[in-house]
Image 1 (cartoon, rainbow, N blue to C red):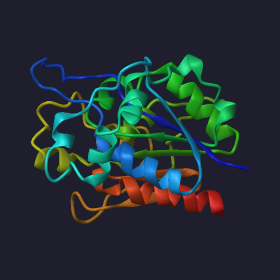
Image 2 (cartoon, rainbow, N blue to C red; image 1 turned 60 degrees about the vertical axis):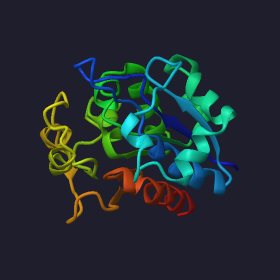
Image 3 (cartoon, helix red, strand yellow; image 1 turned 135 degrees about the horizontal axis):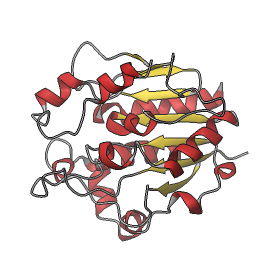
Length: 229
């Protein structure tokens, strides 16, 4: 039976400082979307509020703006998918086998406290599906609890954008909190690659996470390999 992936994107367009734009890191979606499409999977896109998912301006510049991202942005049908994302209350988790949280610093603001996304994530995971994220997308897993009240991330190995990478990217003064630190406080067994900004993926059973934008393709491929057993 064809696998079905629910991709999660942000609705936030700027940091707390309105003059500092942010949004979806486009290649983190496009790289994974392409891998899932190649595997023959069906896909949908959801955001915390539904509707428009704005693009992170820095993801549209060299070297981040690659062929995959350019192709998506040049395709009106693909851009329409980001203009009209579903809201969580429109999503039946039973329709999906995996959830994939994309990144961009914007997600730090609207992913963690979305009860709708938490519900979908919990239901997919407890039904035997895969929960996955790349880069800042793991902020969407910070507060997700399972039916027994425990945190999904507690005691599980994962990765995501590191504090060292925030500093190197010169956004450590803009971000609302340190996701790596918050994950560790919740009992997650955080890991990161030796070299910042290089691809690094961690799979702990049905929890599959990638560290940074360069990890999106490998993270999606790992999801496919977990499905294939």
